[in-house]
Image (tube, rainbow over all chains, first blue to last red):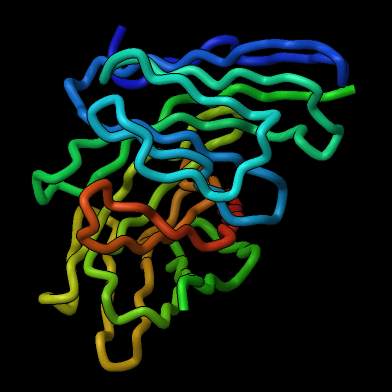
Length: 114
Length: 113
């Protein structure tokens, strides 16, 4: 595996379900990000982790719960979601604090909440 | 202050033509401006990026023009090809440790064969 991988690629869940999205980066980076991409809106930064520590939470509802057990893995736990949470969820990684700003994205998980 | 405004929302160009996408920002603390290309079903991929100490950067058919005083930057795609048809996002970030990106709303480019 190379780059940033995300599983599952597609997810359909009811509003009362609990599911998790997984992201793994194979680039040796130390920072990981969750973004939400909705139609006709800018990519919205949700969470930032730097060396496993959460450094940013952009006022994300508590029904989204991130987890970063190490610098290579990032999870997004979902529960009691709303239909408006349907979107493409993108994971990204970068080398923070090195002067190299590039973020590398995974292919995303297309989430549909019914 | 944190917004990046991108235009146009969509663009249709003939094969061989020049595609131009524009972005504007307000926060002068931004010091890194990448462009991302996204194909349907894929995540955004870094295309080219520029820092404000240069006015232009070219990589193959892709050029970023940067106007620091106007707080604007643009992507030019020369000799546009049908394979360039994708959504393009500009972004801006500042040196704040984790380099948080502020993205534009995207431009859907279609290059006609």
